[in-house]
Image (cartoon, rainbow over all chains, first blue to last red; front, side, top):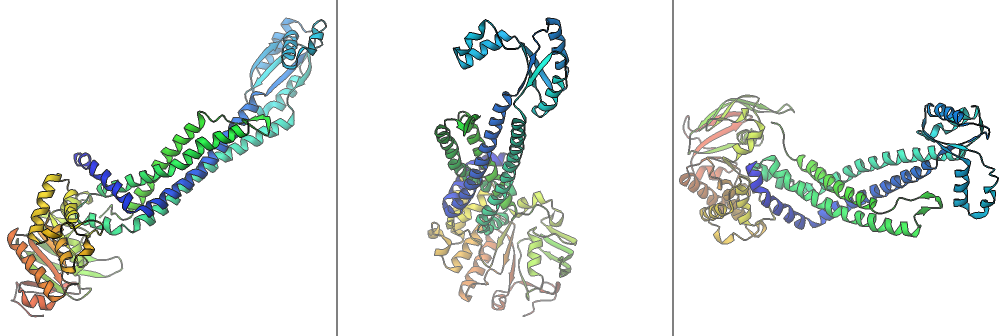
Length: 298
Length: 228
């Protein structure tokens, strides 16, 4: 351990020197890390956006239950309780017809003010759901209850859209994972090529009595340096490129229904994640490659 | 002292590299090991520097059982022995000075001491003025001297030379042998030298061990010197 600390400055020097001496090889591993991280970055942003859009859609996911005008307060409370006790329901709130009209005026303008004297609307219950795929079954059940005039929700189109989104999101994450594993292998192969030329060096080190960690550590540092430089470009593209695209699209995709993920601070997180991934992947990749030329048993 | 007791070694491909080899080499001895290709010379070297483990038998180097060494301990053990190769095995991107210092850095020696020790070693192998040259700027004999310098930098008790003169012309070979003799005398290191060069063995007479098909067929310390 003491030796390790004593050797640290020498190791950093060695790693830095090797990066400069084997510039073309370092460059190729930097490039392969950059490409892999770039693809992972795009997939990651894609998946994050999909999840952001679905979340936005889900918020609009409510069942509006219109009540008979003849209903009294007690019956309203009973109805609320029975809906609340249903399996997938998370909350039920009451909204009187006056409140509904106010909201309508607020959203659509003063045209509706004329109805203030004879309000044509119903009192409603707003039902929020835990799981949006039960939208259909829950609204059917509510419809059968007493004192219910009408049950409204977005319709089947929106449910299919939501389930489609969640499938895309799930596969997006799986794809990102696969890309990450793939990039480790890609990087490992590149670094292995780079290290092949240094087989002799490792052999000589072993011959003069260098410990295994003494041999691998500079290689791992080197890998981290390549990982660092490899992540710079994807990071830049992530922060500036995504911000630019976001501005170009005015923050929405096709229609205002699909709100894109705002660039700040999310892209910063993604960029930091890219850098950490680059460092770790570079370290593991070259560590693994260097270990190939060492012996671990007798 | 180096002692091999009934050492057997065979490889997975079925080759019996060494058979029942028993051998004793005293401290400060200078020994030639000769034999045809495939006679087990390289295996003997690999067993001595801890690269391979014997199937049976014991190898004792200064009281240390090399075959029973834990893998973790091999590097420390290796620092006590110096290796010299036919193909020099110098790091091409390091200067002569750095190549020799390398063996000392591995041990974690402080920079100041390294500088002092490398200068001493360069003095011994007579390469002071080449300290800043790179290996490819040196002749074969000079490169071999650098390798010898690297091997003795750690003050090893045992020096193993695997055909050190294999790539050199006779004149340079004599130089190398004389240098090894000088080292043998000055730091009292045991030297085991594997060689093909019968001229050399003839000229600088020393204890000679002849290997053939994994057996010791002749040892000049028992039964006098025999010309090959």
